Image 1 (tube, helix red, strand yellow):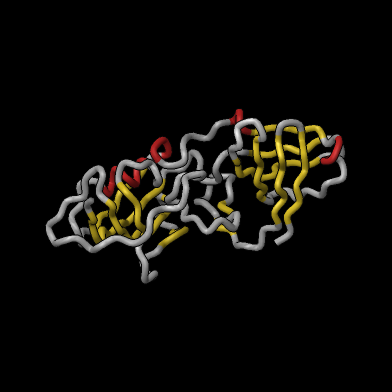
Image 2 (image 1 turned 90 degrees about the vertical axis):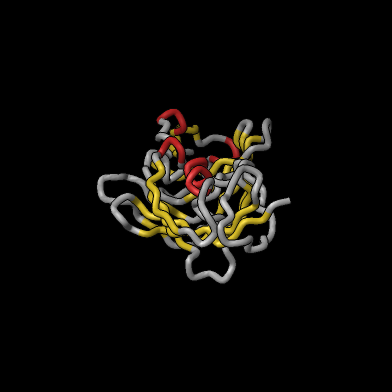
Length: 206
């Protein structure tokens, strides 16, 4: 993977050559879900550290509650039923602790109260998934200084680091002119209601 750092005002732009495939959202939405090579499931909240390792299965009849470490299998879909992610066929489940904000709020709410070996399907509204689409996150930057001769490609995904806060953003290039580049820092899933089929495989308590 080629990586180039470009200083742009208070930002460092890490240009990543994206080789992963894309998943298209339902008709009527002008977004494309593109992997940035991080390996994180769309269930996860971006910028959250890696989750804790595997958990014990727990006993049948246990109910998942705040503070429990849970292991789950899931299938993630758009509301039209199109699947864009699943770990149902993976030997290792997704493991996280309820209440530590490491997964989407709506996903955590769905798991809370589930019993071991229970399966359920829920629809998570955009506000409890990746949030509503925020037009203010679309930014046009002048192509001056180090960025002047950088090759950008419309539709490609880049990682931007804010040198002041140290935070990272994933952006998608919307438009390129000789003088400017326009990118969108919204999640590709922003503004979309999502549907999850979840199976609770185990619960572990301190």
